[in-house]
Image (cartoon, rainbow, N blue to C red; front, side, top):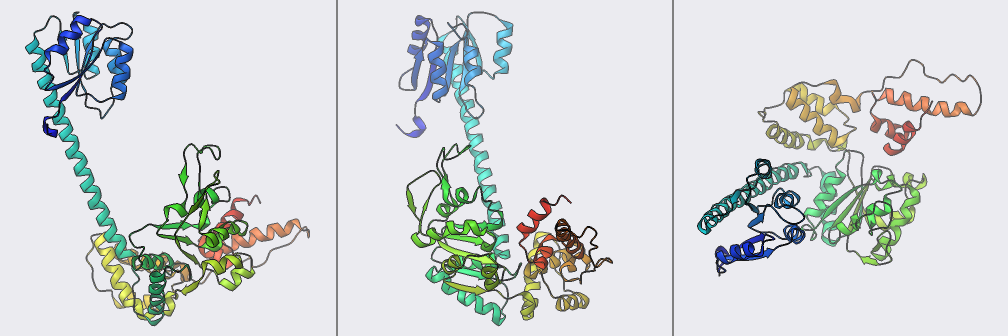
Length: 465
C-alpha cells in the first residue's frame, strides 16, 4: 500500500456497545483504521495523545459528554474532523457544537450510506485544509529563504574589507594566514575600524567557514551571567534553570568565537578563561563533566595593549593566550587612499537599500571627506554616506566626532567645604563637563576620560549627586 492509499484513521466513542459495534462494522477495514472505546475518560486520553482523521462521538456519554471531550481536545492546527451523533434535538447542544467547529451532526436513527457520505465529505475537507497549510508553509519558507538571501547579500556587502591601501593590505595578508592555521588572534584598532569585519573576513577564508561564527559583546557580560553565558549550565543549576543550556563556547565548537572588546571583561572574571585556553575544555555550571572544545578564538580591543595591561584592564597571562599573534587595523585617517573605493562601496550599498539614484558627489562633499579626521573611522564614514544619500546635505551631526569640543565657561570646580566628600563631586562635575563637550556622546566621552563605555555607564547610574 502506497502513502497515497494509506488508511483513514477513525476514532469512535459511544457507551452503547451495540451502536459502537454497528458503526465499526459499517466501515470497511481495508479503507479505515478503527480505534474505539465506550469510556469518555479513555476517549479524552486517546484524542489528546493521538492524531485521527475523523472522530465520531455520541453526545450523551457517562461522565463527560461528546461536546465536553471535543472542547478539551480541540487544538488550533490539528485537522481532526468531528461528527456528533445524537438521538435528541437540543438546540443549545447544536449551537455549542457549531461554535466548537463540529463538522456534522448525525441524528439517530440514520442510514449507513448517510454516514459514509459525511465521512467522504469531511475527509475531502480535511485534505484540502492540509494542502492549504502545506502550501502556506511552503510560501512562508520560500519567503524566509528569499528574505535571508536578501539580508545575506546586504550583510555580505557590508561585511567586506574595502580598500587597497598598504596598511589595510598588510592586515588582510596577516588575516589570511591566521585563517589558514586557525591561530588565536588579537585584533587591535580604534573604535569603528572594522575589527568584527576582519574577524568575519578570517572566517570566510578559513577551513572553519561552514561552521559557527559566534560574536560575544564582552562589555555586556555581567558578572552574574558570565560563566553560564560562556560555558552553559545544567538544568537545576540555579533558580530558573529549567532546562540545560549550551554556552557560547559549545555553540562555537568547530568554528570561531569572537570576543569583542575582551579588555572590557572585569579583571576578576578574566582568570576563568585561562583554563579554557590551556585545556580546551569547559564545564557547564552545575556539572562536573568536562566538554572538549575545538574553537578558534579571535579577540579584539580598542585599547593600547601595554596600557591595558599596566592599568589593570587585561591580565598579562590571558593576553599571551589570546594573542598568539596580533593584527593592527589602521585608523581611517591613515588610509585616505581608500576614500574613493569606500565612497563607491557605501554609495552603491545605500542607494540600493533606500532605492535612491546613485549620483556623483559634488566637490564640496569630497572636500569635506578629505578634510575630516574621521575619529569614528569606518562606522562614522558609513553613517556620513548614508545620511548624505538620504538627505543630500552635509549636516552638523555628520561631523560630530570631529568637532572641537566647546568648553563650558566655568573652567574650574569651585571648592566650598574643602573636604574629601567634595572629591566625589569633582568626579561627576568632570564627567558632566566632558559629556557636554561631546554633545552627550557617551562613547566619545568615555574614550576622552580613559574609561570603558561600561565603566562610564556604571558611574552615571550610581551618580546620586
